[in-house]
Image (cartoon, rainbow, N blue to C red; front, top):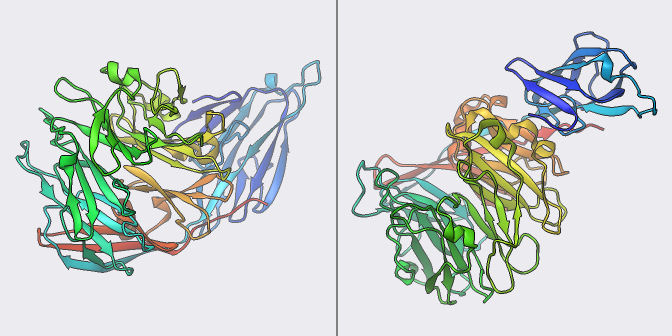
Length: 536
């Protein structure tokens, strides 16, 4: 990996750096909870100190710096950006500056100032609550979990969609269930029709008929193996008698392979439309829009999509979103990269006529993890104001052919400009050569400090995976890793459970069953929140 000022080589044992600037000094900043120890013993820096290392002109400088956390604290990584020398997740950092680049030039070049700053975390504690809930519920399995406040009463409810696990394409779908939270992490089964699916990919909540109640669109790509026959998506509408399956109000798409979907008012008529993000193939219908007439009756439209999306069989996305990113009153189309076909992600900007066009588009920077691994694709999109400036930023998640995870943070600078600030805001914890992918991320206050953190859902907690990226209050995020904790049972519930909020609190709830007649739930929670130790 390279940037403008440092050449970084990463091995399993240490991070090595060579600075290519004329004359410099290093400012070491250590918060409470640890120190920096140098191999020479001449450049140590104690906790809660700022220590200056002057590099003599014309002399080679070399030393090894080690971040050492105190008992009860953990090293989360070196804060990284162009001006920070040490980078990465190894606590050992070797700095080697040749004499030929430490001398001032004849014009009196100013001393360049660089920084070391270890990120230290007091991890807090996690706990498990066994037997949170058990209910007699007929269902065909538990596969996709989606939590949100369905009934607008201040706590999250849960949609459970099942998948079909046979080795042959099924003749019928499997039934899930919708659970309404009673306010104490116990649940009541919602009346009416159930989620019905073969291989559900995403559940989206919106008011499709304008009655003020939340409805659901469930994207389902069907049997996930050759011959990939596809399956129908589902539309569930809330009524006073419970949920009603109104999928017949959508045009039939039984061969569609819907890997993702998004909702938003595309045509500007005041109701919620649907983008069906099908993949493309010989017998698979490509992406299309479902335009709403306001009463949850839909017609198919492809003319409003960019011409490239319609015409290029190799151009589609596994992750999309419809959201107004430039605050002009029109929803924009965010398309994540499908890496082995195109390494770029795009924002097609919404227009007054409700069309997305090839010439009204912003090409987003290629994620660093694409360069590291290759053969990557974006498999999740999320939007959130990461830095507190009132503009919506973009978080893209992806994986490579070995399902190794990566994340990109794109900061909205206004005027339809997005900057990749992944390295500055999360550092090298944004991607991993060993950890498996995160299905999605959500934004919630993980450690109870009043700031919104980035929290992954549905991932394998083994190894050094990230439990949450904690916001330090400035839009910079520090990795809270699984290895900081001994509570393995809690870690598994955080990884595979769904985050359910009640007011400002949350639990990560794992739903499971031993048969088709009962659903059980265990939960994990934060007993004492992690604390990032900030430098003065």
